[in-house]
Amino acid sequence: MKQTGPTGNSTGSPVPNPSQSTQLAGAAPTVQFDVSNLQSSYANVCNVSSTREEVVLAFGVNNVWERGQTNIQVQLTNRIVLNPFTAKRLANMLTCVVTEYEARFGT
Image (cartoon, rainbow, N blue to C red):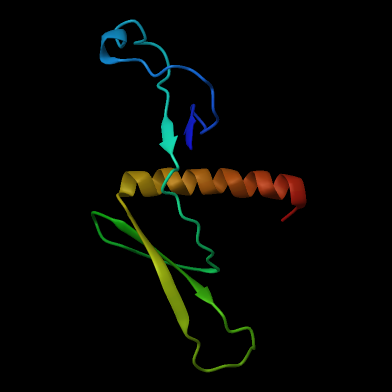
C-alpha cells in the first residue's frame, strides 16, 4: 500500500517526471510514503543519546509495574539514528502533536 501527498494522504496526483520539473518549479513537492514494509512496535520507554553527528533514539518496554524495586530491566527493542537536522524536525513535529493533544484532552 502506498500513500501519497504532503501529509501521507492519498491525493491521486501523478508524480512529475524530471522533464516536468521546469513547469512545476514553484509547486510544492509531492511526497510518497511506501508503507509496504512498515512494522509497528510498542514502546513505553525511550532513551536518547547524541554525538556531534547523530542523535540516537532507543525504544523499549518496561514490564515492571510494582514500585520500590531496586533493579528494573528494560528491554530495548528498536534504535533509530537521526542526523541533527532530522532530529530537530522530529522535535518540532512532536511539539505540535502534543500541543494539539493538550488542546483536545487537556494537559
